[in-house]
Image 1 (cartoon, one colour):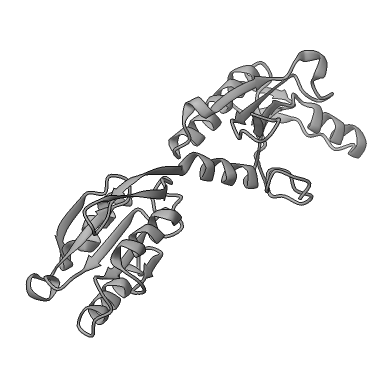
Image 2: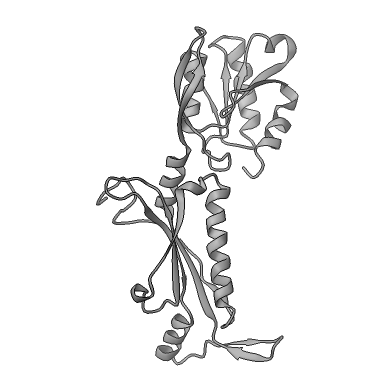
Amino acid sequence: TPGNFIFRTREFEQMEMEYFVEPGEDEKWHQYWIDERMRWYTDLGISKDNLRLYEHPKEKLSHYSKRTVDIEYRFQFSGQEWGELEGIANRTDFDLTTHSNHSGVDLSFFDQASKERYRPFVIEPAAGVNRSMVAFLLDAYTEDEAPNAKGGVDKRVVLKLDRRLAPVKVAVLPLSRNADLSPKARDLAAVLRKHWNVQFDDAASIGKRYRRQDEIGTPFCVTVDFDTLEDQAVTVRDRDTLEQERVSIDQVESYLAARLVGC
């Protein structure tokens, strides 16, 4: 990588879309995709304060472009506060015209409704996968305080990823590595694993295990404790609010499903 972690790499993955529109409708659809792409980032959790639009000056537009707008994120790299996430270009009919001129193939489109034939304009959003991932991670990184077992508070690092982006959705944790608790927790993890990516963890204290899950952005921790052996219920902890709720084991799937919609 030439620098700034994976912001700029010699090889990278890119998402592109070619959206074909009728000439004369291109400006409307170009603006539509600028708005939609911005909404995609904010809907998945990036703060609007850390996003902005950059309009390419006309004198610096690429030869094929009628208008290009970049979505930029406030990466705050040294000497570079903002960096491009993606560009949305109105490429006009440049691509189809060039291809037609060189291939001799007519790439015009006949509109059945209007009985007109035209060569479509192309609206092209092009987004870097690596850069988007860095932006989501940076925006989710949070430091706050959480209560500890000694009655005090500890500094907590938490990755407040949108639940749809969190790589692990649920962690199942026995209160301790106990002959009665661990098998029950493993069984519950196996059931939940049919629906989501679930981790089982019984190493170290429960507090340290909570912290491990906070750091990787796991939205929910399900704790199997000694009361579980009596009441057949578990404690579900929310990553962001730290609220804990007692849920019957036979209701855990539906409880989580209601909170992990789209995951």
